[in-house]
Image (cartoon, rainbow, N blue to C red):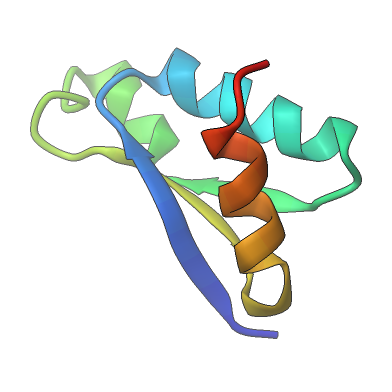
Length: 67
């Protein structure tokens, strides 16, 4: 299983919303570095949304659509 980054967010809430949108469509994802925002580092280290490589195209397409 290889994970790839499909989006990054300066706001951890934006990352969580994107992850929820993917989950609603059956795509598993992981947020990397989300815990750093609680330390006040979100402005320097973005939250990265990761999916399995095989889900990349579908996930990017879903996030590009308007909800």
